[in-house]
Structures are given as C-alpha cells and as structure tokens.
Amino acid sequence: MSNDNKNKAAAETAAPVSNFLRAIIDNDNAAGTYKRDGMPTVITRFPPEPNGYLHIGHAKSICLNFGLARDYNGVCHLRFDDTNPEKEDQEYVDTIMDSVKWLGFDWQASAQNGGGNHLYYASNYFDTFYAIAEYLINAGHAYVDSQSPEDMAANRGDFSRPGVNSPFRDRTASESLDLFRRMKAGEFADGAHILRAKIDMASPNMNMRDPAIYRIRHAHHHNTGDKWCIYPMYDYAHPLEDAIENITHSICTLEFQDHRPFYDWIIARAAEGGFFKQPVPRQYEFARLNLTYVVTSKRKLRQLVEQNIVSGWDDPRMPTIVGIRRRGYTPESIQLFCERIGVTRSDGWIDYSTLEGCLREDLDPKAARATAVLRPLKLIIDNFPESENIACSAPVHPHHPERGNREFTIGKELWIEQEDFMEEPVKGYFRLFPGNKVRLRYGYVVECTGCDKDDNGNVIAVHCNYFADSKSGTEGSANYKVKGNIHWVNAADALEAEVRLYDRLFTDANPDAGGKDFMALLNPNALEIVKAYVEPGMKDVTPDTRLQFERHGYFVADRVDSVVGKPVFNRVTTLKDGWGK
Image (cartoon, rainbow, N blue to C red; front, side, top):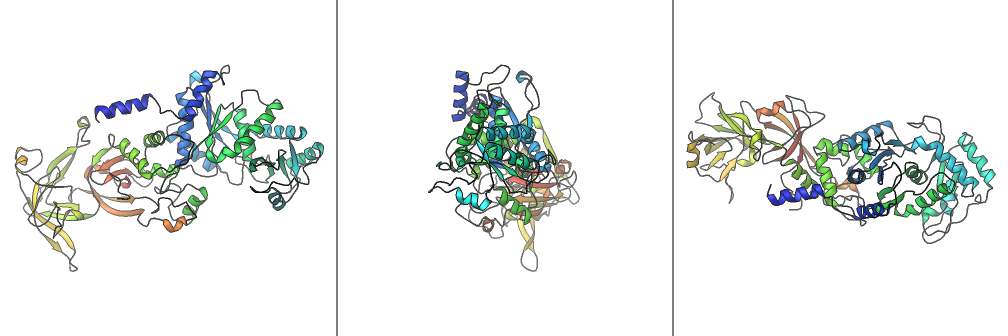
C-alpha cells in the first residue's frame, strides 16, 4: 500500500464521514437536547421483525445504528418488533442475533454507559401498550370499530378523495372500553372488531386516517405464549417502544417518512397521559440500500427458497446475511461498504461492483495465496526424471514475506488450465502452443512439443520438455526470457477438491423494478461446480478460511460442507470486475 493510501485509510478510520444524521446528533449534543442524568446522549436501536432472515439492506441499518452509538459513546439497542405472532419464529430471532454479532456489533453497553444487556422485545411491553390503549379510549383518542375489513378499506378513501367516518366512530368511551376488554378476554373471533386511533379521516396523509392500533389474533406467540389474543399494530407499537426505551434518534428508511406524523402523534398523546416525559424520541429517515443484481423482498427471497431455485436461506447466491457470510464475505468488508456508500435522504442505486470492490480491498492484504487448477488438462514433461518430485516453494503472501513460504513439488505429470494450451494460437497468445516456451510459475521453463487427442479430436494431454537449469530462484533462471507464465499443480500430490463458482443471481441489474418477472431474469451461470486440483497444503484448510487462488480470485472453504482433508471451496469474487465489459 502506498503512503497516500495508508494516509487515506488512517483518515477514514480516525474521522467517520459526516452525513445529515451526524449533523443532527452534533446539533442535539451542542444544545443538550438529550442530556439526562445517568444516560447517554445518543441511544439508537436496530428493531427487526423476527419474521425472516436479514439481508444486505439490513446490514446498512445495523452498521448505521450501532456505528452511530459507538462513535458518540452511546448505546444501540437490539429490539425485536415481535407484534405479529403468525409470521414470527424463534429461528428468526436466533439468526438475527447471530448476524448482528457476526457483523461485529454487540448490544452490551460499556461500563462507561452503565453496562447492561440492551436486548429487548416489543412483546415485553404488551402490558404497557394495552394500558396506553385504554387511556386513549378514555381520553377520546381511540374507538373500537366493528366494520368489516372490506367496508373499512372502502371508507378509508384514497389519495384523490377523503375517507368516510366509520359508523362506530362516535361510540362512547365506555362502550369502546367494554368491547376492547372483551376483545382481550377472547370473546370475539379474529376480525370481528379492531381498535382505531381517532385522528382525521380527511387527512391527506393516509396514515392519519384513523389508523388501526390493535387487532384480534388468536395465535401462539413465540415469547408470550397464549397470554394474548389481541396484538398491537406495528405503527402503534414502534414509537411507544422507542419512548419506553428512551431512544433519542429513531432512524429508519424513507418508506416510513409518511408514518412519522403518527409516530409523533401517538407519543404525544401517551406523554399527555403521563406515560412519558420530555424529551421524547424523534424519527429520522434515510435512503434504504438499493443494490443492483439483487432482490431483497422477503416474499421473493422466500419464493427462491421454496421453489428450490437456491439451496436455502444461506445459499451463497442469496443477499441474506447468512448467505453472503457463507459466500465468504467478511464483516470488515460489509462495514467498509456501508461506510463508503454513505447515508443520504435520496434514493439511488449502488452497483454491485462497489460491494465486491470493498471485499477485494479487505481480502487482498489478508488472504493467503494458493494455486488451484479449475479446468484441468494434463501436461507431461517428457524429459523429466521418472518418479522424481522436486521441491518448490512460493510465498504465502507476496507482500508479507514474514508469513513465510508454502511448499509443494513438481514432477513429470502436472495439471494445467485448459485455456493455457492452444494448438493454433491466436495473435497475442503467449501460453503453451507447439514450439513456444513458457515458465511454469515457481518452477521451470518448458517448451511445448505437441499434444494428444481423443477420437473426437479433443486435446487430452499436452507434451513439453523442460530446461533443468531454469528453475525459479536459481542463478540459471535469469538466462531464460519468456512471455508466458502459467500456473500448475503436480498430479502426484495435488488434492482433488470441489469448487463452486458463484456469480450474480440475476442477469438484469434491476430485476425487481418496473414490473419485471424476476424469476425470468435468473442467471443460468450463477453456479458452476467443477472438480479442481489444488496444491497439497490445502488439505489442512479449515472451514471459513479465505484465500486467493492465484489468477482465479478469492475463495473460501465452505463453512457447512468443507472438512479438513476434503475441502469444498466457494468463489467469493473474481480478482477484478468483469460485468458489463
């Protein structure tokens, strides 16, 4: 790395790039907005619903919320918004916690911030939510509506016409309270009644047209069991959770911008009832991550899994965090990516190559080098001593000599790449063809003499002679000037390995846009499995080890299927971006 790059990297580490959220926090801190005894001035939260697996878009939110808390010596809460028992499961809770930890974040507060485990569940606040709902009814801010779902939808209006008041909107507080308590007691079937906030059916903001805040659901909850048969709506519960937890800056994506008026309304009404004190949380919105060649819709990702297009949620082609982790991405590369794309209020698209570039930048100084032949072709050195294998070596990392060398041998029969031989070379081809000399990387210079073919005319072996005084690293090797340099492994001790060549899942940069059928845009070459040969030292590789196969790209020993002695490698990314070129 050059000094300029080192200085740039140091500057990025020392001073996070400013954005509008940091400006807001800086202003709040300067004004003492959230200066409260014994509490940090910055408390953020990452509030996933445990109804699926997190994806790369969630990673941006995780890095943002936990990163801001870290940089401002604050606290970030991990909170599960588990208000919909029909779609939630403990499996999702477990994988979300694991993903957050893998990305490098923790919900344990530092001793300086009072310590403590800041893991929360919306369901732990159900009693408080219910008490606030009763208060809203008594204060005239909520009523039980008994319309059918169809009538309620029709009377809500649309963007061109105002809504129509429910015929039950003027129910007395005592009548609504009685019905609400009977809803809680389980007297009614799902959908028979619903509790709505009483705001303004003519509001231009559809979210303010008497939004539903409680519905009947006779469903088992992963955390509360069968205690409840009424559950709060997300838009009702979320702001109250923030207020209960003393969140300072409630950061969410732009699709929640139109929900902010109700966020403020419900907290204000609860504060009037004495449930919260000032200062209360404020909501701020940022642009979600839109990444090319990716879909992040939970419904569509589930379709890929259920139709066996992919092998599961952790398939390395999936944009889920468990998927990109198994693919071989590192937490550091994801953090670098999220830092680099920045935080704005404007929607835009980030090219997938930016994510891959961050991965290469992270892996290049870390990944040990190794040799792999992915599409093997036999190379026979006719004049090489029979049954002799001569020791060779290569650096573990070309820029870190302190990491030492890796050892292997060269013998009479080798494996090379099929593309490294051409019987009739095209212009500019400098690898093996009859009469041409090349260097076997870290080995000898050889001269091609011909090839063997099968009955169909396919080349099955290449023949050459070697020059005994040309071995790399010896004095005589400098006497040989060749243009071609190819890699190889010794057939006598090479290790056979399964290599999975992963690529982008879709051929279209925007498979989820403009009403396209995303299933018709699947990349048929998103996965190719080859039987490869790798240098013998790879027999000791443990699962999750990342390395660079010279010339081919960055690979990882699969964390599920790879075992010591019988490795399975996933291609994480190529050495350079080849898409669109």
